[in-house]
Image (cartoon, rainbow over all chains, first blue to last red; front, side, top):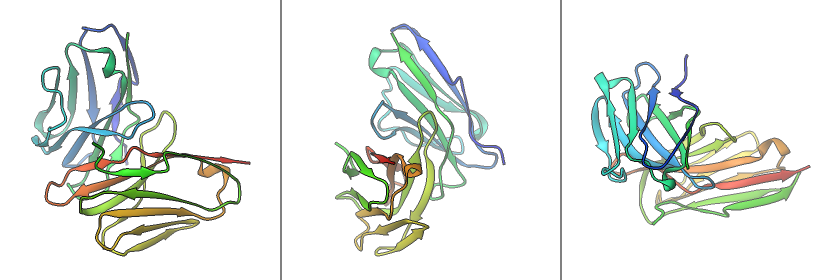
Length: 113
Length: 111
């Protein structure tokens, strides 16, 4: 079975620029998560989708971050404008349902300079 | 504020020693998961515990869920260099059904 696919793997941008990340979850998985992992820390949940509806986005900085999950499958996470403190690995994960095992992609490493 | 507190944050021991990593919270979880993360990769699930007091074994790893479903521990017997990595606990918050992670324990096993 194919895993969670994320792109790009690496991205370097200047502060105040925009960036978008893409995630293709495992086929049939209803739940999709975006996490931010700053170096040396555990993943921090940014947003959680169930199909194409948002379950939780309480920690998403909505003034600059946005996310959507088109047709309940692929998802994109956008940052506009980026700040230096946004430098992190952005992980996408999916699970069959809310309470089952989460499978993670390799992540996108973002560096804001 | 970290919902799940892991301790220790860093641990470096010699091959063959035993160790325990703790994951504590004041919140109750529907289930608790342990993941291991290698550099440049996403976390990979090791185990899920669901019932208070539950103990699960995975070869040399023993996982325990607290009776009140607020805490968990991971015990490794006779640690090997291949056990080196970042160990993360993650809890499914009861009622909210969102998966939150601890800050991780970076484990180094020296040959």
